[in-house]
Image (cartoon, rainbow, N blue to C red; front, side):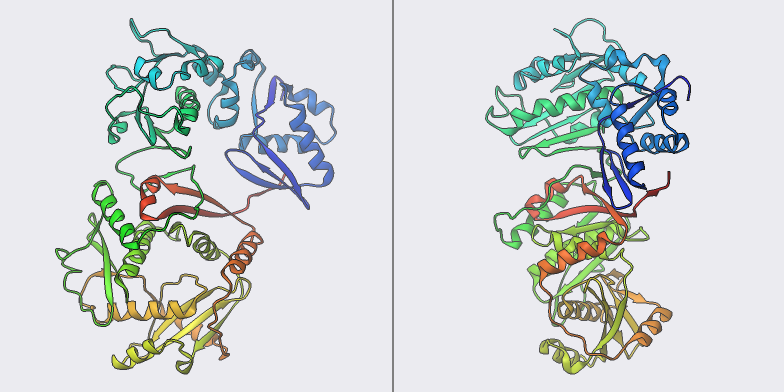
Length: 541
């Protein structure tokens, strides 16, 4: 440890929860088992390293040196501290305002000294068009101790950076901005051309708008990160002030952005408008290999339909056609869009990571999604035919001469359910294996979609239903406790609150990000999220 220094990056939240300390940085959150004394030592270390601290001196002043060394390892790995050689002379950069940006965002695999030198040597050139739209950008960069040139001229060096609205320069360090009345797009590569710049006008952005007020600050942050090499290739800032940063690679249409907003009540529209907006979105984004199936789709065009209607999506790259059945066309079109996208996004994954929802159902859908990761006790009950609450369903099955039974797996802690359909004639069981709190609704959904695939067995179509293997089917049937199951729907608010508590106490945490196209889907009332659920990292130190 001789010759090594540490510096608190001051980007860390720490709190004590019973016998463990929770440490959260921009990069990661971990929990470590600690006593009260060890927690106080952690706080002391972070406070002491707010200024450059010699590790060997700190170790000499404390008895539990092995624990401190292990603690330093954890703090470094989660990006809470810098560790570097005293030969770096890093303190000469501490007074530069841009150093705060590095402390917040620099990944642990990036060398801090090299990053400081890149920023110290960089010279930024701003074109007149950009200055006209953002007159304070130059001053902001200067206030953050960046060197800004008065004019663009002469031979450009590797350390030169250009901020422009029309890329007329031959140079590898260019940030091109595209502006409109409700959005700013910035990019360090040619993919920015996916967003065609609007013809320059005197005032593209209103001086009263939030974009005009906060745009320069986000542009400054993006410039600093780009110089160091830690930005994504593209950023966007919308009129609500939401900042997104992502790599806009055409071949990876399923990329996500880290910044997103939570759903809010919005002005009511007709669902038909939402459907039309989604169809326009799909047609206007040919890089997304999903299309709306129509009469030209050989799998969908002549489906057998009796007593139900359908809507369908297709994957152009695989010719995989997803079909969903229901009784109301507009309702099932929206459901098909949600369930179809979810199917395509999760198709090649071992466990679902994508959730497609709406503003109205986001919180309920999210809880049901998270509960699939929770291991909780359950019971299995058969829904007796005489207890079917939906007479239309009962009559419909009788007309079709279908001998179906429904079994419900009830999860004790969360009061959520998975519904299974058993066809006695084929001795096969099916389910979508999705959690629900509305058993009756799920029974109708499974029945209609089973009828769809049963009477279209000659078609190569994909549906929400999955066949349950014989071993799992028998295990499920043997678990049936023959008790009456209530089909009453629990209070949604209470269900959500309880479900979140069940998830919280399962030692799990989630990482949520939004599909990079989600902003374009606002007019379709769709929310597309990637949710990764992991076990809490309990680090022993």
